[in-house]
Length: 569
Picture 1 (spheres, one colour):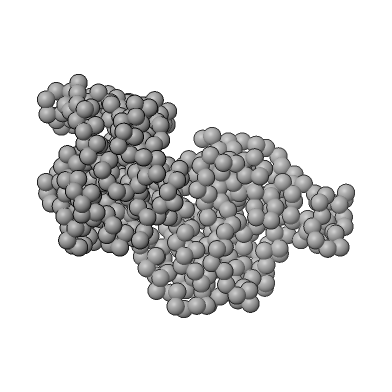
Picture 2: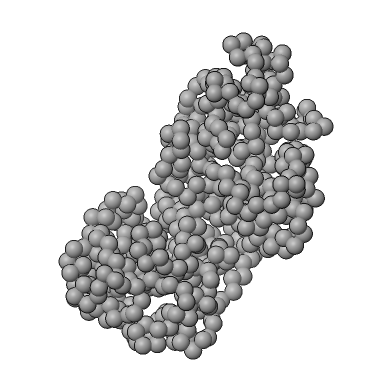
């Protein structure tokens, strides 16, 4: 049987100070948590030291992990002040009469708490001592509306992993034309890419631990984006958007209009699978529901294209997509997207088509034209397109999930809003191409790797102190890259100079693509050949490259194939 852990937390945020209808004492929540402590499932519980003492009067360390986090933890999060600015803004709390006296508007810690549930759930997965498979957040006061017997007697959660292998939300029908929990209706529809007709509940949600990296990243980006733009509801508003826009990751279970989630647990008890299929029609939504008169988003965002080369592994492609959503979902939401499917295993085609349909990629099938052959084909396809820039990825070059780490050269793994920043840098500097990674798999951009690949006459000219290659292997004293200027845009630093070309993630301009791949073509466009050519053109001042002082992606070919199938061109 799959190992399940429930995650919860409880803090006194002063709700008893509110007017009738909104007021509820902390003792009420302690009583409800006390009922929840009778479950047979492992529990991970967050709270202050006083709550720890309360919990272990009934539970034991064998089935309970208590993580001390007091209210100050919420103040340390980067979205705390943003929430305060919005909740104190009359334009926000005067949207509708009820909002001004609500918990969201009146309590400093209410929204910081509920909007942290996803992060607390993800942290529980990381800190888990039970080696759990599935994690579900459950509100400490849930037994106020859901009978505890579902968990203690019926043990209905034992059935849930069989019913849903995805991340799951519980949703109820919702009709409005103004706002949802304070989140402007027009905006939540825009972000959901359809008319919103149901809302996800925040009292119970979760899924398999392998999904948490993607879901947590998506949620973080939605939270920051919406708060930065001045939109705020509760965690349920953001869960609703995720439920609409990521059907490949999420199952949405339906309950009644009253929003009481006891129906979900009753259905689970009776083996009733009440999932709601997501049906999106973005074009109808934009034209007919919101009556938007400006240019549709699909035209506004086609300035940029994303190209991915895939080979015999839909899982590699899917993992790349999920890493993009975790790191910066603009890589999925904003550009026109193409998959160059180079696969020889045609049994993968159906899966590739399904992924392309789910995430908005145009599927282009080729018969193993090779890695650099595919790279050349992409440059020619882009040259004939209406796009101004394109970003290039292979299916085994994922974005890091580490938001605080550094690479072996000391550069950050993460920067927020990477998609918009690299586009801004390209426009400011008029680069022909901009590489994303300083550190690569076999080396880094501090070494001038073109030295290995240029003709001897070029080596003699530009590297007079290093005219000879090693007899075999790599030279530990290979020439260093000559850099010129370090600059930054929106806090992201980059450097100019003789940056060598390689088939690592990068953004390329229209003119840069012509210079690198179109005006001069090679019968066999090996990576080494292109690297040599671009280096020589860079030294002539014809090509202007740049590189980020960042290492956001990594190479990870986890789905291996027969080496005899590998082709360069």
